[in-house]
Image 1 (cartoon, rainbow, N blue to C red):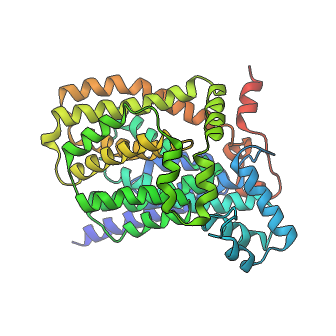
Image 2: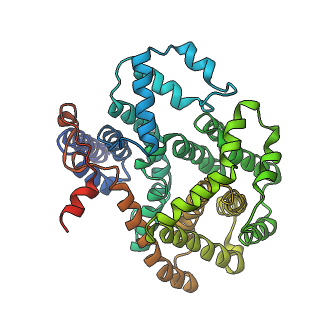
Length: 423
């Protein structure tokens, strides 16, 4: 008995010393320590090391002078700081007809930071603090349900899940943080029946007004529960709808509060749709292809599991699969509206989460082995492209710097510029 107590005590202190070394090492080289900490993903402190790195990435985030959302966030911060905008000015503008503020968290947080500084790096670090919290928790929610021994295929799927909505998406803080918050409440509800966490999903509306749509989908699922055949048919049928009447959509959304009218008008505007289409044509071919590969992977597994593996679906797996199909069908329809395709990313998050765990639970099925081999090359393409996009926002300081140096030196040159300079 004494020997068991002694062993447990030694294990505890050994684990504590390891944790302290990692946290101290983070001050020297965050990127390297974060990668090393992933080997200990079964220890809770590794999740917080990852979260700290997310914050550090926000602090060293490359902010363009114009174009991306982060540039507008930076300009808004400087305007708030220079003009001395008050709390009442902000609260009176939120949810007000004619105002640009139809969300709550981003303008309030920007105002709060503006009281102390006009440094956009501090603002992006705060964005990353919030985004990174939900991001790290969602990722570890998946990792905690996987055996310690991770196969190469499972590793690819985990990395895919992590890169569908990665930390550099703080560039579009409102939409993509809302996505992480929605998933944070959704997964425990589907997997454990934890209804209290649903309040987080509902709270995603405070980050981006459009999450009224995912919350409504969730509400209908909670009402109708698992209707596998109906959801699958809906999922397949919506895949073949390739046009939609934007004016009809605008009329359908007429019930929304008046302060949302400008946004509804913007997102359903035909000219805006044409500009989005033209912008997509200018994107390098491999970017849309990587997204299509991810979608095809979701479809491939969804069709196979419905036809051949549905008898193995029960409990949380049935919940995840049914909701994934239901949400994907609505995301297909939303993708016909300009910028609505972003909801497909959320659908893919749900489906990849499900596929990862389903493969773990049904590893020996022969047909699944074939599907794994077929899907991996495409998922690797998606991973490579996602990391390449991240290079536009990650700096040299992010990968080789540390928090102390970043307080005195800010490198606003994207990593991709250094990579291109080598060729």
